[in-house]
Image 1 (tube, rainbow, N blue to C red):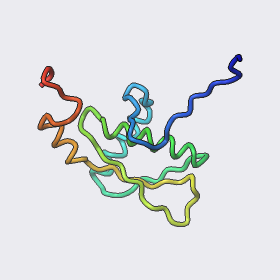
Image 2 (image 1 turned 180 degrees about the vertical axis):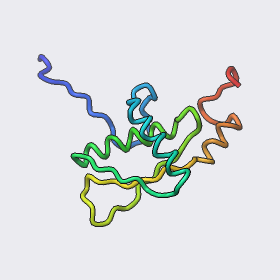
Image 3 (image 1 turned 90 degrees about the vertical axis):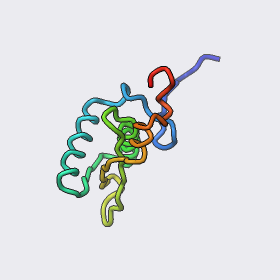
Length: 116
């Protein structure tokens, strides 16, 4: 029986990370800019999307990039948004001290005996 259609549906949740080269450079630059601003002046970033599905998909990419960021892992936290639509998100980016400590000590899964 011939296949009529086939469509890839990316996960918006779950532990499997999107590879760094599959995350858009524009999103990486945006996150670096937000982190730089929030490191100087603590606060939240508010973002609005066309749909809630777009918000979920981009948040997954944000979390995936920040967790495996080459310059050091960062953590993203979605804040509650009262009286806002489902397609609006507030978030904070902070340094992930625990993950960076493990990486610097050579205890992360990416480091092997060959590349220590």
